[in-house]
Length: 230
Figure 1 (cartoon, rainbow, N blue to C red):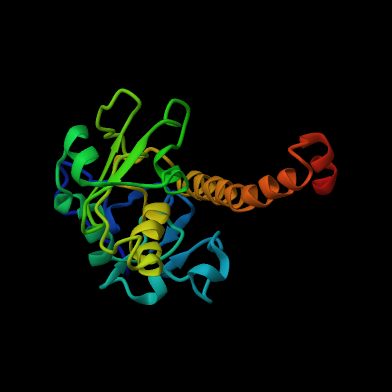
Figure 2 (cartoon, rainbow, N blue to C red):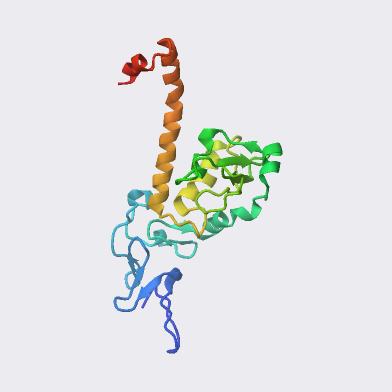
């Protein structure tokens, strides 16, 4: 059978075969979370839920390039080296305590902390970046280092201040697509939802100064100024 990793011997049948996904011996298919893969024809049985975002062929496995890429979720191809670099990025992240961070690191503005304030009880998290913009540390309201996979500080390959576009591509996007590590409990769609919520908060912050100016023009009368936005 093509495109299938075979097991040898009869003492133990390993269900985790092709690219580490589970093989269903009853059907001969591989379970890729989002959909099933058929090794007989070398393609998925259903269309890619990501649509054209993952390529023009909705059924192919990693755009027919399994040597250099894999698809752990069944959604889109991933360059193996790239995802490994992403998950191991925190090996470069320096350790720091709240006292040192407060004295010699830079605290992010409120609107830059939202990605590290996800979930109830995390609204007061404070985010600090090292002087070079690469190291990152998050502390809760009790000045304790946050280490959970959702809100923890992560090493940035690009500084958000000096290279915001590359930071978004190389640091923010991978965390949304792949999570902050193998222990990240959120699904892909959960992470997209979190990113959407963060974006909405940014929009609210962007328009709030305009509301303040209009209120001032009405002498601080919030009710009268409110008619402007209704």
